[in-house]
Image (cartoon, rainbow, N blue to C red; front, side):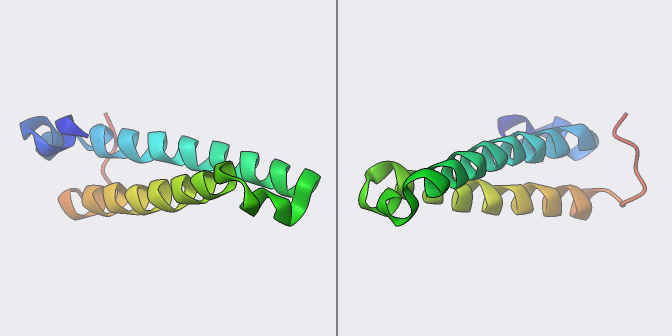
Length: 83
C-alpha cells in the first residue's frame, strides 16, 4: 500500500493490482470462514464476536479491493500489461 502511494505506483500497474489481489485473498478466506460457521451454528455465530469480526473484515477488504482496482484503472488503461 505504501508503494502504491510512491513514484513506483505511478509507473507500475502490478503494485495496485497486487494490493487488490491481497485484499481479495483476505475477502475469500473471511467469506469461507463465515460460511463454515453459518453452516454449523447458523445464527448463533452473530452472538459471538468472531462472527462480527469476520463481517467487518469482509466489508473492509471488499471496499479496499474496489479502491485499488479503481486506482489502477484511473492511472492506466485497461489494456496495459502488468509487466
